[in-house]
Length: 196
Image (tube, rainbow, N blue to C red; front, side, top):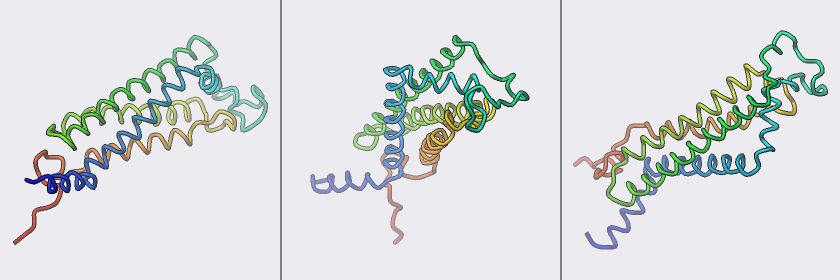
């Protein structure tokens, strides 16, 4: 195979399902890394969010904090600062682990796309990292924060929209990772064989 043909084959890889999946892995890795870094280096900013969500003090459709709260659900509120910190540290740990795992997955994708490695390892790591993001944002923020702690009632501390976006971006990546395609089999062409 001459150099010109090898170069053409390399560019064809950019239009494959594995490359599209790798792009979603990269975007999610970059995003969750920056989120974790921001939460570590600027701890107080998003800690206030966790504090207000868990204490449920603004679940009153825009009234002043602590006013107009629904007594039927306020028993769910957590007013212990130690538990606020533990919850926030748990969020940061999940974000950090997801970032590390997705960075490993992206490196493995590049080795498989442009080298001789298979996609199996990259897909496993990517699936794990993206599942962590879905669990954090769909399970933690949407289900627990949004419903259990009634975050949807707060006009000031409502993180449902960003949580939905984050869960969707990770979910799309998971779908791409698990779509069947001959391109996942290393050594096979990404294009179907022509019929003669």
